[in-house]
Length: 551
Ligand SMILES: *[C@@H]1O[C@H](CO)[C@@H](O)[C@H](O)[C@H]1NC(C)=O
Ligand SMILES: *[C@@H]1O[C@H](CO)[C@@H](O)[C@H](O)[C@H]1NC(C)=O
Ligand SMILES: *[C@@H]1O[C@H](CO)[C@@H](O)[C@H](O)[C@H]1NC(C)=O
Ligand SMILES: *[C@@H]1O[C@H](CO)[C@@H](O)[C@H](O)[C@H]1NC(C)=O
Ligand SMILES: [Zn+2]
Image (cartoon, rainbow, N blue to C red; front, side, top):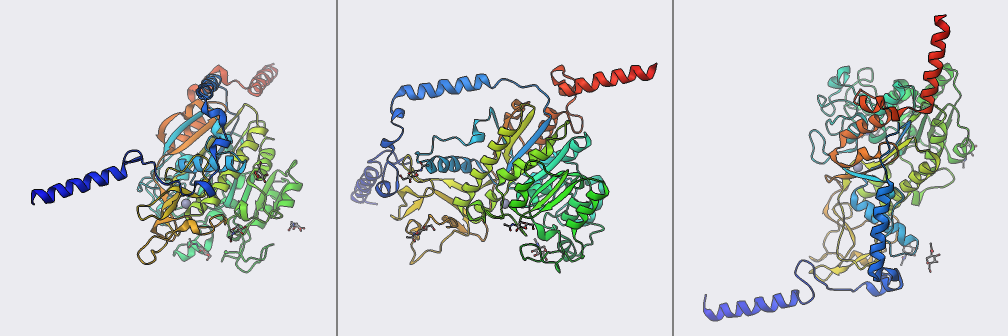
């Protein structure tokens, strides 16, 4: 190459560098504020106090004071409530809290979700035995039974591969969840979800199955197996322990319980091919125990027994999953907070305590569809359910909030403070075309290029609830993410949940706090601080009886 050519190249290079670095460095440019005028709130009108250094010093001081007040709590957890935000990745927390603040006309980023005020936070590693990026059934087995197993399997150990019915028929592979541990201790247990009650996450409390898809007998027989070898998940919930001892079961999924020849209250046929009506069987079982019971299918029925639920309550509010909050028919669909309230009213009648599992299950579905607005709104509904629970329970209740796995939604593009979290980034691609603050690396929101150019999605009506956020790789359903998820804890032994640990440690930590389960809690249970007033009462009563009988 001639020296003149070289000089031209150097000159060009200098010019290019000057252009791209004119405002900030290459990796952190200050460019383009195209959308600030029409779409962004003006932060100057907000948060004026933030401009003084004093504001941030006070904020830090308050933070330290909060930490110091969050004293170690060594009490016995009489009750444990686990709140599971399905697919509630860490970016989901940031985006949901920002949306919460923006709905209150604030800039948003500074807002806290209710559960973000909990005193302890940790990170859980979500991989499964055979997958770096897990699904909701192997993770449910980890965070409910404490054992990592294979993708797509639930309640069985790692010797069972997905769809291996025969391997799962070996009872030595079966695991007990913390719901079973609570029942074994004489406490009560229940489940609440916005998905089908037979879906992967809630099934982790009661089912043992080589395939999460075997929700009704139709799915088992279709796979070439029989339900006497591999009972379907709905059948397990109604007819076998621990599911048949749950005091409350609330969610969707009616179709898995009724025959395909039977039309339900909302006009939809069931999935079952064996002719069994498991809702009727559930009633018959509770009646044979002489226990009050009720099956409900809509919100007004639920609300009418809100304060005095029967001993056993089964609520199936949809044929499939419950509706997204933003699209729900409020006459028939209770909110997650309402479901949680009824469940706590039911379970708190047991003096010994309870384990309750509450799932915000459709955060995950919103993400799979690239419907960021719905995923975030479901996260805010989930937050309201947690707030309701904290309002209702005392300081003998451990509340753990976590997610099963992440998703591939990213928060990107140097958006201006207060920028609509569901709106465009302030940045443009190098092709000059804008993009959204939230986008996904894959999913059904991927748009084909038009004439070789990326589609400008910011010209679409992105305020529609089910508008698909932009994604890069075309996929029918967006995938989960493999990143860690947050674990937040409040109440007795909350401090156990700090650190970075295996997701499978979670149920053992909860069981330790509650003094239940397979014996990893000896120290906690023998500690004097665990003496509950009631156990003291029982101990005194027992020793009096003992003396009476010795006479
Ligand atoms: C936010 O501002 C809009 C427009 O000024 C107003 O209609 C709405 O009521 C406000 N919302 C809240 C929660 O303050
Ligand atoms: C389970 O069976 C039902 C009824 O036949 C069917 O609609 C559903 O798609 C099946 N599920 C799977 C995952 O195949
Ligand atoms: C709820 O269910 C009850 C009992 O089936 C029924 O009488 C009532 O009309 C239902 N309510 C709605 C809003 O569908
Ligand atoms: C965009 O969608 C919202 C919500 O459905 C609707 O209210 C609004 O009219 C739509 N705007 C346009 C320009 O279609
Ligand atoms: Zn999912």
